[in-house]
Length: 379
Ligand SMILES: C[S@@+](CC[C@H](N)C(=O)[O-])C[C@H]1O[C@@H](n2cnc3c(N)ncnc32)[C@H](O)[C@@H]1O
Image 1: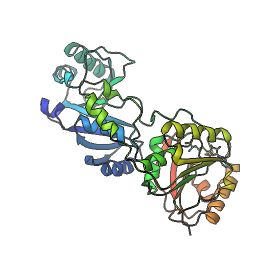
Image 2: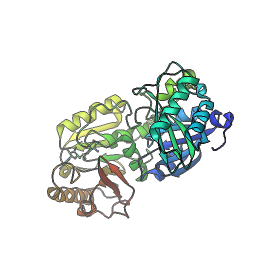
Image 3: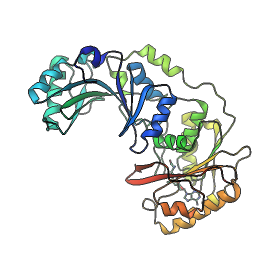
């Protein structure tokens, strides 16, 4: 979008940038395509699609792997601050911002004649207050992101607000919880589509198990939370409520989703979180050590687990024995099941003795680089 016409800036069709954890762009792109978004393209840091405001709402509501959704509402060249000032005033702010709702502006500059992010933000703030009348506040729930790259200024509205990994129904977290967005993308990378059982033998607060149950039940991840786009001028309450109500396809999954952990507190949290998410009836959480793990009755499915990481909880050495015990249990009792294991040390993954395929995606999580190791069906 390089044109300067109003139609291109805020018409029914603009670029939507769906942010994800670097390393998982292609997995998110698969999800975006499966959800029927148009012109999905994986780029560094996320996926772009084209669409209008209903697609922006739908991306926030439906995409499990998205961290946030940015609507790219305007784009123009700006070679110096006076030009930025003039062109920022011509952005049709009233088409998407409300004069009564506070806004904040975040700016960044890269490889451009305008290099001062603070001055950039200030010009855009002034354009918004003087042209539209909306107050500027550092605490505002609505945020505008201005980025000048190679002299091209792109203005985006952050349509999500709070990061989308906050589904709005998981209140209790255990040690080193996995973000829901990452859990969903790792499940997808392991081939999970909601039609097989899932077991997490070190489930902590239950993230993998609850995500899997929600996917199987066809529930929208954003069904209970609020989004920044509800505060925008482009918002249509009735259309949004109808979209939100279309979730939960009435699917009655034939399988259960199982979590266990040796820590009783973790099990209590998992049960409460599943209750709040509305999937208590589809999940089963039991307190026991991984050495006591048995496969549930019925067909095989996916074991997915993130055991304690070396650098994060305790020391690495005793963990080799734990990973070894996990691998032994799976190899002897889980014939026909696939395994996905998330860890920060290739040597710990190796200690399981499991027949891993070449490593899967790797992401930064809580300051550590974690990699997914996965197997085909175990012999
Ligand atoms: C990194 S956390 C898992 C976090 C989880 N994925 C979540 O999102 O909350 C690792 C978990 O392994 C559990 N654990 C450690 N040793 C175990 C063992 N021998 N048997 C079962 N669980 C164990 C810990 O209690 C902890 O909850």
